[in-house]
Image 1 (cartoon, helix red, strand yellow):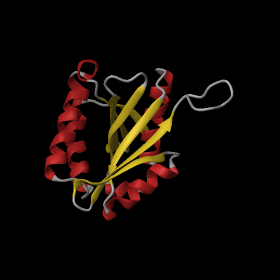
Image 2 (cartoon, helix red, strand yellow):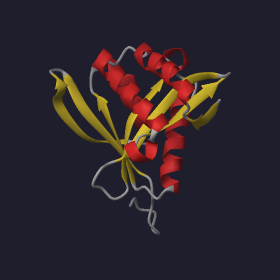
Image 3 (cartoon, one colour):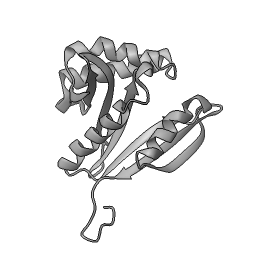
Image 4 (cartoon, helix red, strand yellow):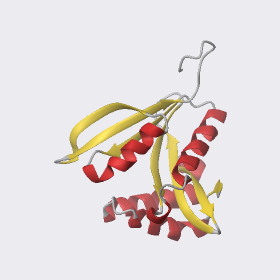
Length: 165
């Protein structure tokens, strides 16, 4: 498996794998596709950046993130998705680790992740916890009744005493 920068040829496979997860609405798939297009065409202007997990010449997953407006060193992970046939093979963890490493190298302090709190998304929420993220907020019925917004966070830098900054 390789983690690499996104290319124009990745757009269609990414859209297909986001749809194949079965956890996103058609509208959410369309939004993911728009962010991928921006990450490909104009990342510095749009503020959307992306990496791709590739194995055997096939796109297996991707992650998209960007700086949180009006903050100092805080970033949002907007999307991370892995082909459902590839779950459990380390693609998601490798992508998230690569995003974190990229952000650390840039001096970013905090990475936030928003996720749906529906029962069918429980494996995703558990994945974030396994990757060292802490739930920092939950807003009940945010997306729709029965679908909470769950926010996870991880500090990316530590001070001289090892405390998160």
